Amino acid sequence: MNAFYEHHEHSIRAAYRCFDRILLNGLIQPFQQPERVVGFFSFYRKLFPVTRKVLTEIADRFQNWVKEKSEKWEAPILDAPMGRRDDFVEPYFHGAKPDKVVAIIKAREPARIMTAIGTAKDNRWHLQIAQRWVMQYNFYVNDSRWGRMFVRMCPYLPFSARVCLNQHHWLANRLREENIDFGKTSNAFLRCGNFARLQELANSLTPQDLLTCGRKWLAAFTPFFKEQERKQAGCQHRLFFAQVEYCDNLIFHRRAALDALGERLLDANRTIGQPDKITVIFGRKVTTRYRGKLQTEIEDMHLPNPVIRSHYGNGFIKQYVRDHLMLRTEAATNNVNDYGVKKSVENLPQLRQKLSTINDNYQSIQQDILETFVDRGQLRKLAAPTVLPTGKRIPGLKLDHPRQLALMHALVRFAQVAAGSSFTTAEIHPYVAEALGCSISTYSLASLRYDLSKLRAKNLVEKLPHSRRYRLPPSGYSVCLIFLKLFERIYAPLTAGLLSPLSGDRILQQTKRSQLDRLYQRIIDDLDKLIHAIGLKAA
Image (tube, rainbow, N blue to C red):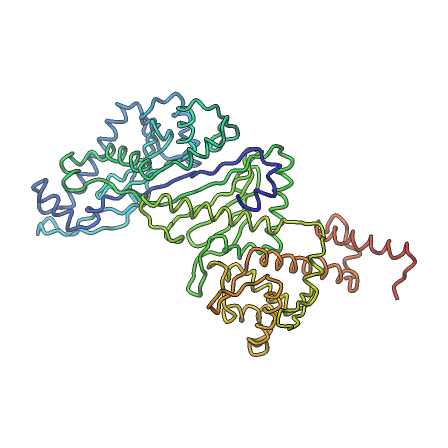
């Protein structure tokens, strides 16, 4: 349970986590090497050399097989639509029997295929893998265990494939088997007679569940191989993660509470959170060699509410309101290696843990931004000096101290604390100097260590034992955000508005001012009224 859930628990009716979209790559590994393909044809098919005509005939036979099966299955072959394919094939699933192909969509898409290089005159050929745009077939299936899914097959050797699964459909089937009542939209559970059991079932998904389903349909859609060849030559697909989404779903009692929270989250991601630096959530160190995307975007993805999407490497995390009552936080990746997980589906448990932690980190960071408290003297204690057991006196923290604020800026840079929230003074030194607007020669390491000692005295920064590294704990991270928020978003702009107001602002129409500027002006006007009421006048 993370801080976000704990804080809003009274407003949340139910919660569950599960995999959403799981996209798997299917590869016949022996056929990724041209020499092994030549060996297969020579030994099992008594065919040598492997010519361009041989490869073309294999693809033609596959396409003819698809046409024959389409008629037998009563599954139409359709051209790819302009919009979402899932919506397009939705009607074909109505009343579909288990383990039935309901529709086949054909489309030209990129694939790695085997090509033959040579001439018919010399009859000397060699094979190589090449990337080509070819016609591929998407088989939409109502699987008996997984429900709705699709398998994309390339008709050309080495028969590269993709399998797309969704755990929401899998969970719906498990709930039906246990006679548990539930209410499901296209891709979410808003009602369930036993949410605790739903979560247990979600956690019970194993790699074998993926392998059993994937291999069953991949074998069915590669008629080129004989059973003996599958067993002896290893002509069966291995499955690897291509894209995975893991979602945390919080179902609120009232839509009004969720709408208010959603607006605050959108606003928070525009202010002190600095969206383009929210990378600490991914738990990966960002070095100077990093070339990926580091930013947060607020997007309109044709949903009723905007989507907050934060990127890191080949992955991202998004948060949005769906179905009026649900706040979904969804970690996703197009390359699981970014998170230190190998691509084989056998690593499903490790991947689940990684993505779940990313969701927790993201929500905790959001709660740090949203958190509010009643004053109980903690701020005054932070401002007061600290006397160490040795008798040494360490000055307190000041809301307007430039060097202290610059250090806090550097500490909350997500790029610096991504690797386990640890750092050295040398690592953050240039960032503090940059925030101060000076060079590292002007702001020395000794000055940085002195400023850091003030945070250490308040237990906001910890020094790792037997190491030169420091760690920023959650409480330190939160306090740094609060100090920066108070100075940059309240004290500094209000002081500027009071002492140096721009003449143009006074004549600017109220309707043309931003909401934030209107709120600032309201505070300034109220302060003027208060000063006048108590008999004070400006000098």
